[in-house]
Image (tube, rainbow, N blue to C red; front, side, top):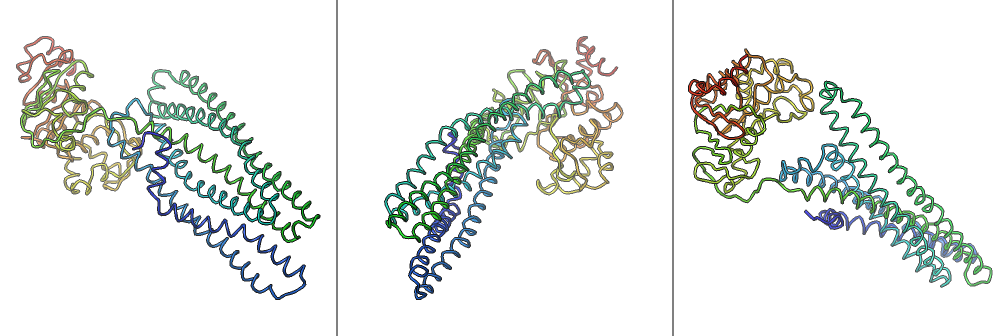
Amino acid sequence: MPADPWRYLVSVARAHTGLVMLGFGLLSVSGTAWVLLPWAIAKVIDEVLLAGTTEPLLPWSIVLGTVAIASSWVFVAGYRALFMAESHARVRTVRNLTDHLNRAGTGVRGAISPGEMVNLSTEDAHKTGSFIFQLGFGWMGLVMTAVGTVLLWRADAALGVTALVGVVLIGFVVGPVLSRLQHHQIAYRSSVATLTGQASDVVGGLRVLRGVGGEAQFSRRYKVASTHLRDAGYGVARADSWVQGLRSSLPLALIAAVTWVGARLALTGSITVGELSAAFGITALVAQHSGAMIGMAQSVIAAQVASRRLTAFFKTRSDVADDGTGAGARGPLVDPASGLSITPGLLSVVVSAEAKPTEAAMERLARYRDSEARWGDSPLGSLALAEVRERVLLLRDDYLFAQSLGETLRVGSAGIDEAKALAAIEDACAADVYSSLGSTLDGEITNGGRNLSGGQRQRLRLARALAADAEILLAVEPTSAVDAHTESLIAERVAAARAGRTTAVVTASPLWLSRADRVVWMVDGKVRASGTHAELAEHGEYRSLTSRQES
């Protein structure tokens, strides 16, 4: 993906070269026809009305009709082509965002906020797409200016010079204002990203904020950020008001100047009455579309600001290398950093008083972090990342998207049939989730699983992991939000469902420990001892830790 904002915009346009070129060509024809319309009317005035004869009326009527049809129907076709190119460009940008997010994975964590992701996929994708659309109309304005200047020059050099100089002066006057507008838009876009990020954070943690009395502090922070956004918006509005004012007034000044020069020339007999009317009509059209060229410049600035944010996102990189090519690894998963080893075919339970070091060890074994971890004799880094993802599944407090229950369990998409999905729901003791959604896999889960309780969400995540039927399942505290009776049932059913398969569960719950084939005890992120639950219970510190969980 191009790292430069301008190159990214060019790549978006080049991806739809056919539609863009078709749109530019059709608008060029339409713009030329519009400018020729006043010229054809001028010929009717001079050769029919002033000459007092109707003989040239028929051919010029045919010319007028042809030009009028070309200026309208060809314009519609050009508009359609550019609109399709814009739509495809928006979709392409969103697809690029999705593809890069899949590649970068957790590498974007901390670099891009959820609110910023929303802005990138909506506002910025729209602006980079509309850039193509507005560029087409800016090009049409340039063609009309060129053709109009040539026609005015043919009538009289003074008219051509006046029109050309006027258009150039408009550019010199508006240019600095557009530069200032770009500066304000950059500041405004940054403020929008900050505010939406804060809003996204509070939506995700509103219940926690209320629990610890953090509403007042958030309100103050949000008020400060809102004030900055308002001030940035005022800056954009001030600059934009000047652009809009100049966009309306300067073309009128150009029309007045050309009309005044044309009237002087008509009085001296240098041009005819028809040519004077043509000068007015052509200048009015050129002036109108010089406003379109200013609009194109505004759109280019907005697209460049949006592209800058997009390319900043595209620069994020995965925190896991994807250059391995190995396959078919066998044996235990081993993490040298902690000494943790997951024995194949057994239910291992990892016990620790510290959550973060244990979860970090699981992330290394699932290759969510680059490390010296290995699978049998093969370093995990030497294996193809796609194979590791296919064979090793890490279950944490993962997100639930807005979709049906069947889609959440990947029924159909991953070769999972309804019977397998229902079995996973049963093994995870999530039958109440199924019944609360209408006892159908078509039941809808809202964004984040907000229509489910915390315990239901946790059991649904476990059901999703069981339905995936991965070769190795690493689960971090999969039953921390359920009661003891339900946890006992889950431990029993998961142990039975995955009998003979490699499963590791991070928990200090005796309900899991009593069913474990092997227990690993970790202290300060390092393995202290391993064995059965009964063997490790001889250690007082271990016994104290698991007894607290039991009580």
